[in-house]
Length: 188
Image 1 (tube, helix red, strand yellow):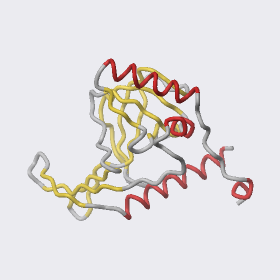
Image 2 (cartoon, helix red, strand yellow):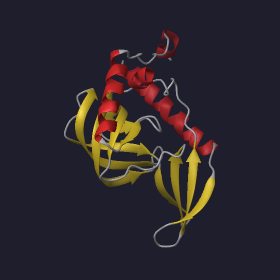
Image 3 (tube, rainbow, N blue to C red):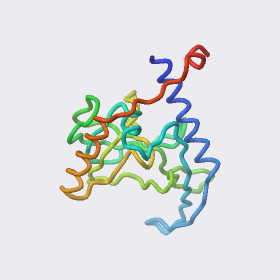
Image 4 (cartoon, rainbow, N blue to C red):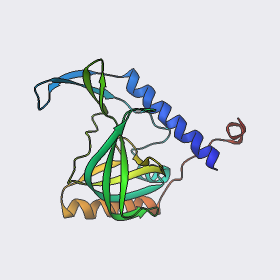
């Protein structure tokens, strides 16, 4: 089971990386210092229908609502990610609780003295102080990584909070589990 999960995670990462690299669009925007930052938008490819809440939650290991405390770092291997400290407010699926690290695919990267902001389909970086719904895939030594675009929903009001909870509790009750590779793929 762990081998299949690792294969899926690697395949998912390769799809995301390939999509980001193949669909880069540059737009110059000044940052706070007046320097230009190139913003690169990539398109994600998914192995399941992420627009169907039942499949989205079926592919996730942990689903929760949390408040972003602060950005705590970034990394570029195997792809650019930004790490945030998040206080879990309510768990919908899994056993996540307390303060955790949530990873977002994308973030700032400097190449040859030029700074780039890599975003998947315009999925803006999380904002400290804001509350989000998170649909994440796995928890490892790097934290919880949410599914780009569909796996983070900004919650602005108490009504948003309640509606999001109801929406995804219903999706969990009707969950469509992630399709596993057939036995031929498992033996490879």
